[in-house]
Length: 289
Image (cartoon, rainbow, N blue to C red; front, side, top):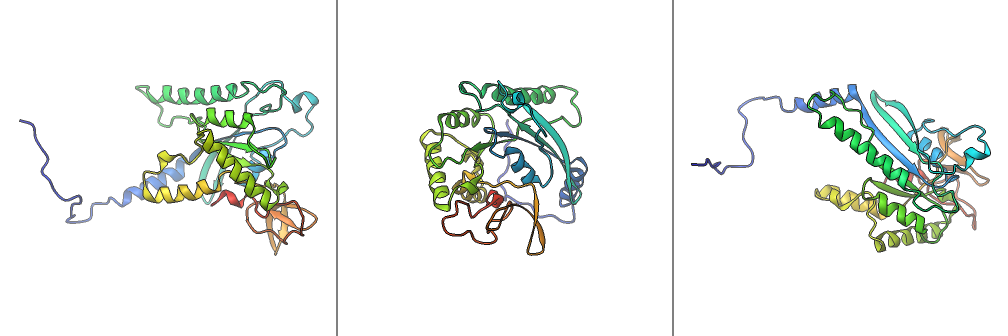
């Protein structure tokens, strides 16, 4: 005769101290020792400030450009993938950051199937991790080379997404978290930027392209509220800067212009631009809704 569980309350009253709360402390200590792994891929045409933007996000020279590239190096004939890994530590927390760049993407006259090497690379990292995970005698810590997110840089044209942009995000969004950003957003006025963002949102909706955060992450009501706020800001308008300037007695990352300094991590600018200036009033701080 099969046994059935007797109905009862969802919780159970404890008669004394068990030590369940100590589990969180143990997990924190273990995580502090081992650290985190975060693998990010940046995709976009040359000259959109991908390396500068990555350096701005992580406040370090995690992505470097060639000092004096030759003519052949400036425009690769095919899409090449280059990864660089750094260990970043902040307040005792370590993070192993791997940035994968894709020089050559979108730089050719014929960009047909230029996304194939990128898709192949992403799938290979999934397969490599899966092979390690299904082994009977697994490693205590499996090296994680999977791409956790792909930041796609959209040229600040102010018009619509190009067929290349749409096709790339349509294909990549099925296998990785894609985060579209408007590169060098300070080249657009506030009105142009708002219209451009609206057009991109319409393009993504029309072509059924699901970018991060996907609706699968909306199971928790609190997560749904946060994700909706993020979706309203997609695509993010970003301004990268890797040089420090003095603002109100503080050293900040920013770009110096004729009228002031565009801070890379804060929304307000110092000072306000003059009428007619073609600059954005927000920096990379918009990445943090």
